[in-house]
Image (tube, rainbow, N blue to C red; front, side, top):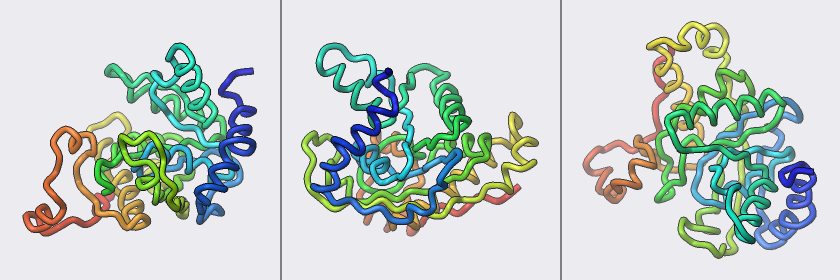
Amino acid sequence: MSIGGPVLYGLLKRGLLGPALHVVFRPQGEGVENIPESGPVLLVANHQSFSDSIFMPLLTPRPVKFLAKAEYFTGHGVKGWFSKGFFAGVGSVPIDRGGAKAADAAIKTALRLLDQDQIVGLYPEGTRSPDGRLYKGRTGAARIALTARCPVVPCAISGTEKVQPTGKLVPKVYPVTVTFGAPLDFSRYAVGLWAEVHGTEHEHTVLRAVTDEIMQTLAEMTGSEYVDRYASDVKKAPLAPPEAQAAAAGNAGAPEPSSRI
């Protein structure tokens, strides 16, 4: 049996890692009833810590598949074996994130999993927040949602930035809460309009509108300050302190949904 099979996932979640995490951290799951009991689901969440990918599936009643970089599955020796076993065990699927076609490969993999009626977890920001704020979303989640026409459940994760801050290996005990919001309805785009604009110059307008609606919802659920820049760009060129930005711009609100076509 594959190391990434449901047996290992269940063993980690219910037999080994999961019970220990519940005892030590006592994580709270809210709005679990918003996750459909069956069928494909796209979970979209804010991303503050490596441990997001541990606590979110821990509190989700169904298995969650994440797209993870292939390097986690190709290491050698004991460390490589442990890495492969852990990431496969928590539901990760390897994706080659290098090269020009990496994004297309990730989207195709997500669509394949959704076609199998699975839950796929995505972080629209594309990387961890460098400072706890919520950053501009990439449009991949929107493309997947419109193509698959599946429920999109927003997920607000809090506390993980304290449990395991970026760069820290040893976690700290801190309360974690994962809140699942009501599914977002993008049928006004997915039925008819998406087919019309797909592959045209208007495609990005629709994708950006859907993405901004997702990010606005996450900003409201998390109470986080929204920054209209990609987190990956900010990591390369850090922003000024929040108070300096507010004084200069006078506006740090959540994104306004784009005009509907």
